[in-house]
Image 1 (cartoon, rainbow, N blue to C red):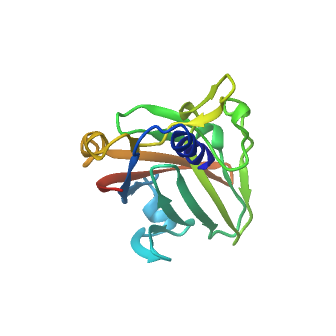
Image 2 (cartoon, rainbow, N blue to C red):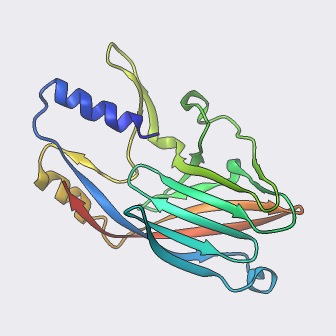
Amino acid sequence: MKRGFLLMALTCFLFACGPTHFATYDIGLKEVERPADAKERYGKPKIIRFKDEGKTKYSFEDGLIKIVWLPTSSQFDFVLTNKTSHSVKINWDEAVYVDQSGRSKRVIHSGVKYVDRNSPQPPTVIVRGATISDMVFPADNIYYVSGQYGGWREDPLFPSYGMGAEEVDQKASGLVGKNVQVLLPIKIEDVVNEYIFTFSIDGYEIK
C-alpha cells in the first residue's frame, strides 16, 4: 500500500520538484464502541498504549477479540486474535472508514488488487484461537493516472507531503483534535458485532 507514496517522492526527486517536507502524525485509539450488550457477553474492555520497536501501538481486548492497531497517515495496520471457541468472520463489504470530515468510505484490505477496489470482497475467516495481520484503507483514496508516468496512486489518509515546511504545517495543524473511525463488523455464530474504533489526531511532526 505504501508503494505509491515512495514512487511519488522518487518522481519528485528525479524531476527536481524542489525540497519536499512531510508530516508524521500522532494518532491515538480514543475509544471503542461495541454492541449494547457486549459488556455482559464479552466482559469489560481494555485499551492499552505501548511501544513496540520504536512504534506506538494500541491494544484493545475483550472476551471476543484482541486487536493491536498501528495507525499511520498511510494506512491502519492491525493484528487481530480470535479469543472465542468458534470461528469468526470480518465482513469486509460492511466495513467502513470515516475520515476527519465525517465522510463514510468503503475500505479495502491486504490482498485486494487496486483494480478490484470496488468489487465485492469475501470475508476473512479467523478460526478459534488464531491471529491474522491485515490493514484497512479507503477505496476512494485509490485512483489511476494515465500516460507515460501514470499508474495506480493512493492519496494518504491525512495531508502528508508539501513543497515546504510551512505548507505542510498549514495542512497538518488543522487536523489536530479531529477524529477518524474504523468500523469492523465481526460475525460469530450468525451474530454480527459491530466494533467502532475511534482514533484521535493528537499532534504531528514535520520532517
